[in-house]
Image (cartoon, rainbow, N blue to C red; front, side, top):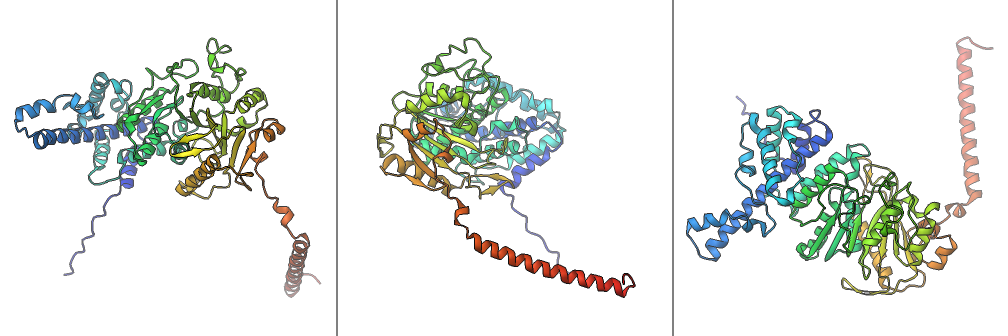
Length: 528
């Protein structure tokens, strides 16, 4: 009798686990409910892991470092919330700890998870209004389905998957996955990772205050923190301020930042930055933002015409918020050295109804660089958009280990529209790490080195204000960057000769086929 072959068990990857989580809910709930349910489970799983990890750290500190073996004293210390909160870890009770929640009977699981969320909302100020209430009972999943999803989430073990930023990788997977499958409105809360990485790499937010007036799910802040960590900095040295108008996305931002231990100030509630600026008095060092493109109906609040944020400039159009965003962010920047990187639709580069504001921005030397990105980078639109960099200090001096030269009266234009070869998820374009490094080199070399004609055809050009004035203060890069006319390089005589030869060969083949067809009909008795 032949021996039965035992197939080796295929080890699950993180991606297969995450896909299984999504697949388990296919067709069982609305897209936003599925997103919120999965992200909430991930949140509870990882704050539970960090709590248990901190608990062991406290125990080790007391026993091994302090040399105290009194179990009563140790247990007392382990139950003190401040022992966890000092390191940015949420203190959990038995009712909110994942280790207990995952073991609940499937029929009681929905109510138990919703109760845990309510307790966290009541007891943790940082989580107030961050978690969706009654999400598990409202989705009305079959007990077995919910249990299956919980079991999949449990497989995401930091001891097994030792990525430096496992929490972020899992969280970003679901944010990105649901953005790709969402319609235009649902896709607005997620800015593709490579764009955020580009902004952080150009601004270098090493320290100080980072602000995003339309923070979505908090991706700009997360990337700023990653950038600081990657360069050996301390994320606790930055202050994060933001605001978001959409309640569900506001919750996502609080969860996204809290799960990573990033301290934040997102205001008391979800509300428009224009109608109710919750950070009126702050001046910030860095702004990283992706405002909604061409937002309409944003100006329906009192005193719009006399809003102090427009001071020194014309009142922005009420039909489109692009320049209102620009003036709002400029108003928030530290007047000495604040720098902002943000995205806008390409129309803002040359709108006729914003010419007066654009001219003043250029003449006041606030615009540092204009970088046009490739098409198809966003899940919510296929258009090409522009990265603007504003800078309150173009006079030069030391900055982040570099000596910057005086760039007054200059603007760097970069056109990346042809950088579209890196395709993922079948149709979306993203910038590679090498491309991001290349853009940074273009930018930093221009900032640090005086070159008479800083230009590369079809890629970049540093324009002087006199050239910009001659072109009616347009900020469209293609009006300054040299583009090679390929037609002038063509040998027309050779091309015409080649076309004539191809036509002659085609005609001979046609004549031969026609003759063959006529003879065939004659054999069959048709024709003369």
